[in-house]
Length: 252
Ligand code: PEP
Image 1 (cartoon, rainbow, N blue to C red):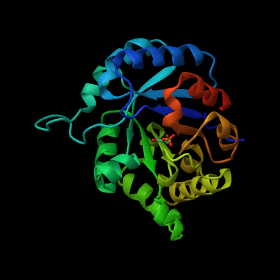
Image 2: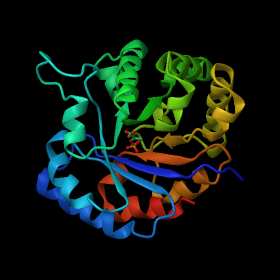
Image 3: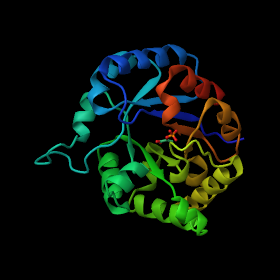
Image 4: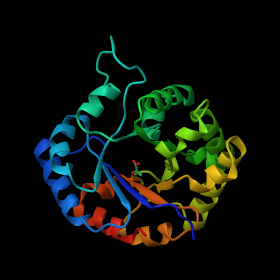
């Protein structure tokens, strides 16, 4: 039995206006009072201020979905780490496949954001995952390991307690297709082996690795019972309190 605390995070993506976000957050705060896992919600930037007031003093952590790799300055349309901190954000999702694929974020660019987050003491959920073509070509392990190595380049071992890895196979995100428990666990185990190679076995053993990709109340318990799966990054099902809380309740 591992000592890793399970961690359930909701990525609301580009959904919910401020009032809806505040009311969803209030339901989640109420329903997570006795949660045995860590619980995080990441509303869109425009709702962070409202949701921040709702989660204050609760055990729900406020997350952001992205941030700039620069601390401040002439970056039209970007959101800085200080702006997130100012709103009470404690964790930022970086390297999500939608950012990688639609907005062209590279491993190196994501690494620069992770470095900034570490320097400024902000927790990170660092997403990795292969596309369908890469999986079908038998390259899933190679791709995911490369993303882990490049994303964590020059990140000190002592900073890793601030990083959670989310394994999100791109073909399972928002598609209703979930990786089988065994397939997901196998990739999580490969991520741990990669961490052992770049850091050490004790670091790899401590690292929390979430699974993401069409996690729902119906499949959460099985996924979360796997040896190497320590939580979930949830998209669609995090937009309904009842579904998200059902997943939270599956966590140990
Ligand atoms: C996600 O976007 O991180 C995600 C896992 O989405 P979904 O749960 O909708 O597949």
